[in-house]
Length: 348
Image 1 (cartoon, rainbow, N blue to C red):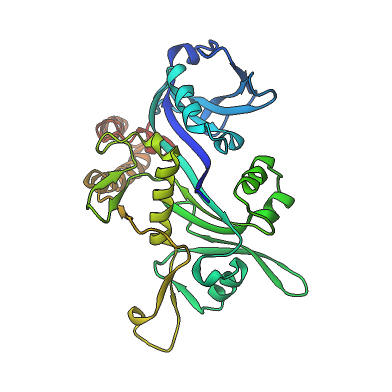
Image 2 (cartoon, rainbow, N blue to C red):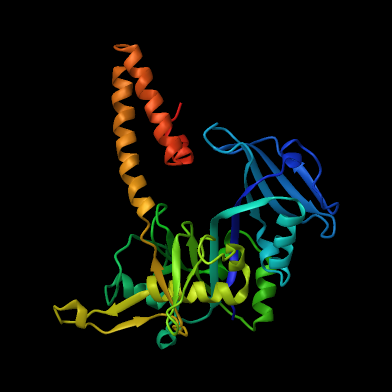
């Protein structure tokens, strides 16, 4: 079964017409303004397509609460049902282009695969979770993990997550059948299962990607392919294409879901290792060492300290406080840290 995009959210620069409240260029689309916003945006519009009655296709958050964010910034989240359609890539591309939205970058993408048993020894996912909790298996790379289950005549484990809210990538293994029964039924997912011949209790492995500053290396040619949209001219919207999402999922699975079988050997490097999915191994996940990122990290620490000092000086030396505040704002602008500063409440 092909890997499936289950969440697709992007950052765009909106057109002036949309920002002013005009109808969308595509006459099939209807925008409906909500009477609420989000933590970072004052306005949300839901977009419906007349060709799919009662079907919402996207939600757009816009008009930032902070002046530090670009005035025409918009965050578009496409609806889950749309992502399961064979035409989703072309539809989303046309949606962005025809309505004159300027694509900036991805903000969140979830890629998943559904199955009954893991490839490794054809083991049932719940049994794998138990063996991990009993420390029969240990994960190669350190990470936080979280387990959910039910207590009855025995313990039933339904969910295992690696990573935290701050992680660039989180990985999940969970009982998708149970989620659809207990949380929200999604007929389009059941239809996808039927198309792919999946029956019975179905589990899902899913990667949530929130930081796209990474590369995939072709293990045959050594070529590096970027999925942050800035290297080799690669349009990161291509992640919607099945061949690309397959490559990304496989590389992430090899990197993040690599385990060892615990034994008596005190030298952990000699323990037998395994991966829970059989992949073609043609793409290797690489984090990008970004000198600008490292530089910004030092700048952020300095700005925080300067901001704290400036707060202490308020009411004692007005002119000095004003100068410090000007310096803070100039540094934020120079290092393009407006969004970070807005979240931290630093820029005034």
